[in-house]
Image 1 (cartoon, protein in one colour):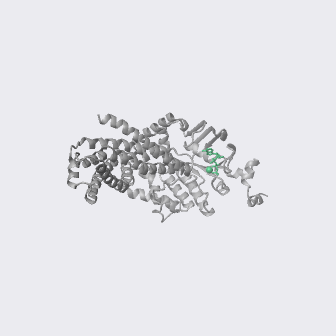
Image 2 (image 1 turned 135 degrees about the vertical axis):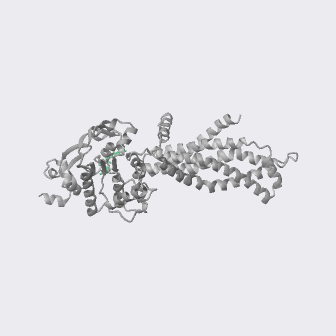
Length: 248
Length: 246
Ligand SMILES: Nc1ncnc2c1ncn2[C@@H]1O[C@H](COP(=O)(O)OP(=O)(O)OP(=O)(O)O)[C@@H](O)[C@H]1O
Ligand SMILES: [Mg+2]
């Protein structure tokens, strides 16, 4: 379980997070949705501790993460898998080395064992036969998928994903969504996914939080989202003509 | 940021960089990579520059010693001492600040703006220790070797100019190289080089590590890294010379 309480963050006097409180349950896919620029990435990075919030608390289970020092945070972070919006693969390492990296760093396994694990993770994100390529030689969507593989190598307890399927075709996008959802169930992880893709919302959103201009303005499940009378959310959900037609 | 804040942030970063590494096997592997990247790859430039500088000092010194009462072997002595005391440590360090410093700053800066440093941090890796410590160790181990190399190649450069351009008889030159030689000077040069190695790698890492923004800032920070480490090298040279050579 991850919980944030009354987060505030402003840049140059403009609030990017304005009193955001939310609870992200274990074993569920928690989605943060919102328009581009609404503050999703800032919220996710604050949860990971990469951005220091101005005010508020962040809890990982029973630990008050926001008030820990770097060394204590490191302990929690070892159980965290994070996917960045821009993938953030290590560009001096090959695909395989990228996925091996957490294993090399934190386990004492034999090389064979580590390689098996890395290849297993790469297979799950459907990247095979590219082990020796460097990130610069991959397509955008492949980078994303390799980054997901790297995030899940150590079976994290907390999985934070910033737009895992942006830049992917709808088919692969759904494969990734389902992968995240099944891993969440399988390992009982606490998963938070940033998205602005309605497909993923309807596919995997157990608990959905809608961020509008830095405020949490709606929370509910994927079933409730279609019946909402919240105007901002309605505009977001039924943005396309196709969606509007389905609604009417 | 004020200068004082910058110094504070620099020392805090170094404290993190010099904390106990996650795994010694990884530190070893990274250090070897850095030795190859910064040390071995600096061989050619150090060789070329030292060769020419050795030759030029020989020609110039000979040109300046016009007095027939001064023995010709003084050219050898001058070449040796200029290399030992100043060129092979301080000047080579300034060259390395340009080559190694800018590459460290831009590498780390690039990693910062593409969120690779954040990715390390959220994995629970101490990114400062993982990225900076191997660079410092590699330089501390390898820069003194580059210094020795520069001394030897510089002396050889002088010798070649004697042979090829007929400056002074090569035997006089060799006699001069050996004349009144204090092995202590080598220790002095190597000590300076160790300090320079720490300055170049840590200062450049600091500038790269804290880049904010985009490609332009990465470029700026790499320039700043070179300028600042050069200034600090000259300052350290003054202080070390004053304290070591009494
Ligand atoms: N370092 C920063 N300095 C100043 N403003 C920032 C900074 N980071 C983010 N912002 C501002 O915060 C707001 C929210 O940005 P954020 O990246 O969280 O959006 P997002 O919801 O993730 O959008 P997208 O879906 O496009 O990724 C934006 O208006 C952005 O300009
Ligand atoms: Mg974003």
